[in-house]
Length: 279
Image (cartoon, rainbow, N blue to C red):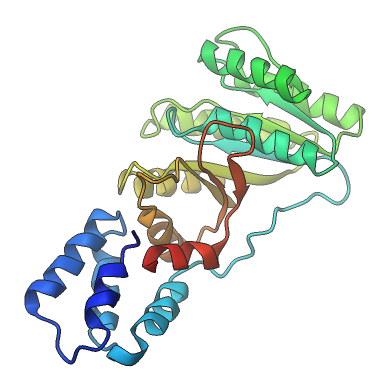
C-alpha cells in the first residue's frame, strides 16, 4: 500500500481531517524514509488540499520534488562509454554491475566489466560467475591489488577492442573514511588518462533509510555522482529515500533493482514511482 493511500481514502468526501489523522500521516511519511524536511513540506501542501482533488494535488506536489535532470544514460559518442559503479558494500553494488552489463548486452551493445573491488574476494568471484552466466568478459587482478590498476587494464582493453561500454566495480568499504573516497578519486583519475568517465552511478539500498542520504552526500562530493541505482526496491521497501535524495541533492534515480535475478533491473520510471506512493 502506498504512503498516501490511507490519507486519500479518508479525505475523499470529507470536509474535515482530525488532528490524529494528520499525526498518522506524518508518522507514515517519516517511516517511509522521506525525512523530516520533506515531510514538513508535504504536510503543509496536504493541509491545503481540497477533498475533490486530493489525489491530483498530491501527484503534482510529489512530482515537483523529483529531480528535473535527464534520466537517460550519459554516452560517450566518440568511443567507449565508461561507467563507474560506487557505493558501500551491502547495497547491491556488485550485483548491479552485472545486471547493468547484462542489460547493455541485451540492448545489442558490446560490454566489458572490470572487477575493481579487489579488497573483497567475494566480489571478484561474484562478477566472474556473472560473467560466465551472461557471456561478458570480466577483467580482474590480484586479491587486495590496486583497484585503479584493474580499472586501467579494463579501459585499455575496451579501447583497443573498440568495446561500446566498460562497467567498473569499485571498493565499497568504510564510506565515511577519507581513504576510500581518495581511492575512488584515484580510479577515476587513472581511467580518464585513457577515456573519460561518462557516468558515476551510486547504489543506494532502498531499505537503508536516511543513511542512504548520508551516503549520497559523501559519494557525490568525492566523485560527482551522475545518477543513482536504487536497489532492493521490493515489497518490503517504501522507497521514500528516492524522493528525499532527488529533492535535496538533485541527483536523478536512473535505475532500479528489485531482486537478484538478471531481469530484476530496469530504468527508473518516475511516473510509476509517484503513482506507487499513493496507490
